Image (cartoon, rainbow, N blue to C red; front, side, top):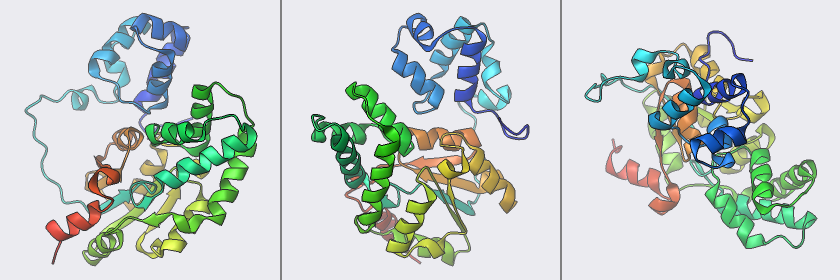
Length: 293
């Protein structure tokens, strides 16, 4: 499944060690004293796992904690360890809720799709649930929301209707204030720019075209279309390998725990932020405060 040159992500090793111990998610959850949903999220990489929790899992499945790390020495650096500063030359961005304001629109799209099949479903509740589950690929979002609502629906039909709604209303997916200025600044300084997102390529291209920003990026990657949904780091590994730019010169920008795990799994630095807590103009603030020529 994974190329020998690509480190196996932590979340994959958690699942593999559970299966090797012949434990179900429910059984592991019981012994950890948490919910089955939480174990599922550990194994999807959608929530971070503390060292303390990882030690508990290791004890239960009979593995040394070093099993979960490709390089134990690097994983347990002393707290006072200070990294040497490295100039960043490659910037990788998530799309939705990082560069593009899509939270409200995407939540309403999911609610419209689900209520088209299940009219009794609560539209507003679905929107709220979407807001609280961030970073997942669209198919996983539907599965998670349906699971929490305890209702059944045809996910393939939901996804097809979702694509229709988004294609017809793609103009509603507008970039945040300051995005163009930020991209202009980075390109003017010779930086390489990339997008690595769970959004499907067909819709991704439409969003970039509507906002006129596609030309800023050296490469645009749909992890879903490539078959490696975030937080699986394969797509990031491939970008790094193709560019030949040292890994330490990369940095990833996202908005969710999934994005954080994605970057960590790829071994690159990252910044996670919430545009909506910054009046949707975080990039404008950065340009005005720090990046003026």
